[in-house]
Amino acid sequence: MLSSDAGRAGFHPLRVREVERLTDDSVAVTLAVPPELRETFRHKPGQHIALRRVVAGEEIRRTYSICAPATEAPREPVLRVGIRLVDGGDFSTYALKELAAGDTVEAMAPAGRFILEPRPGRFAAIVGGSGITPVLSMAATLLAREPDASFCLVRSDRTAASTMFLEEVADLKDRYPDRFQLVTALSREEQQAGLPSGRLDEERLTGLLPALLPVADVDGWFLCGPFGLVQGAERALRGLGVARNRIHEEIFHVDDGTGTVTSSPVTAATSSTLTATLDGRSGNWPVLDGESLLETVLRSRADAPYACKGGVCGTCRAFLVSGEVRMDRNYALEPEETEAGYVLACQSHPATPEVELDFDR
Ligand code: FES
Image (cartoon, rainbow, N blue to C red):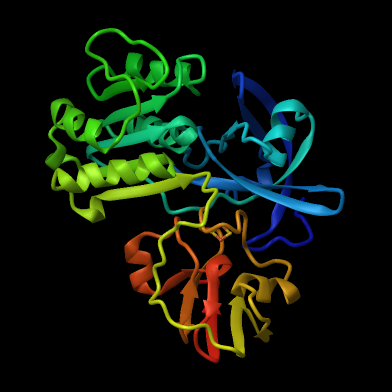
């Protein structure tokens, strides 16, 4: 069964198979994937899905990372996501307090480019809090499929009781004692001697990482969690001589407007026209004062892809075919993507009288 607006941004109603309590403030939700949607929902390790819910006529969309290992055909995809309660978060409150097996939720196909495709080599991740979710899928998929790969996980949380996926991570340690290395830092708990305690900031990581593994020999670093942790980890790695193209980042929960502006700071055009192609169909519309290019498209095309509208998830990524835009902030696109001409439609405003976007590229 497909929803009426299936397409790149189409939502599909899926039945909840299981809701498991992970900690006091987090759950893992497994969705059943019907046979006809198996390929649509087959994810790559590290991807997320957008879920939506309509409350009092208002649509809420949130993206959640898939924690389950990726599967290959003909095996069934396992759609299990981790959800942590966010203060005042409508969707996470609903997921923790109301959602139960047998309910239906609407989900978009897996998306995102924070991915680790299994290949031989040495990989490492630095994660904070619920940032473990996509990295769990990466590590489990890599270690199961690629005998010549190793994975080092450095994770931080407040306390052991608040740490998501403790069992799953312990299981990886038991299964792959020679290829999986785990270091846990708890910021609010005393730990055994020798383990780091307190926050994992730039200084602490700069001291810790070279003692753990040969930093320069790591083929890919995956950083995921709150903005401060990811930024500190990136600075530590860059300080230790790691090339930028070996560092991959995904940031969760950005609440303020201090993101990086990645396009050149040009003045917004006063009157602009947007041409956009989406699912093979093009249209053009005037851009109203102050609105983002995503909002311009959404006025006529309800199927335009988006989830967070905050520059974090990357669902609204589009190729800038012509013209210039100013982006408010960008936590989702890698430098290579912006250099290649991709923008986040939800953060883009026209800087030239004519702008053309292609959502299909
Ligand atoms: S909708 Fe999430 S980055 Fe634009």
